[in-house]
Length: 81
Image (cartoon, rainbow, N blue to C red; front, side, top):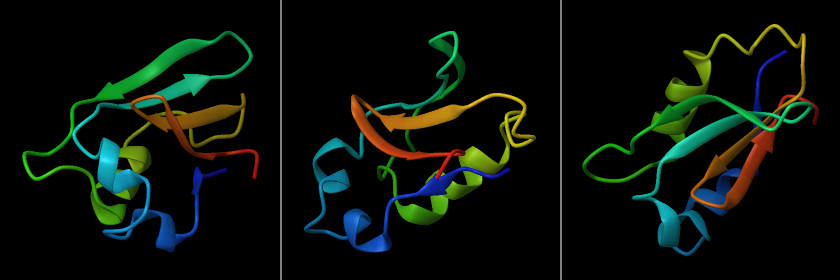
């Protein structure tokens, strides 16, 4: 079960990601609140493609446990959507 991200409009220049694009991406097991993966942003900041690539590298895609994705403190998606 892959991580579903918020609609692409959220990642546009006017979307909220523009304001946090230089914050780390964190994938959190929502049952344990444990950080599964933390990825520093690219030099140019996050965009939709780079976030999808980072999420795809996570071993949490199996759906064995719920995972939420955050950039900084901003929730951007989940494998439960």
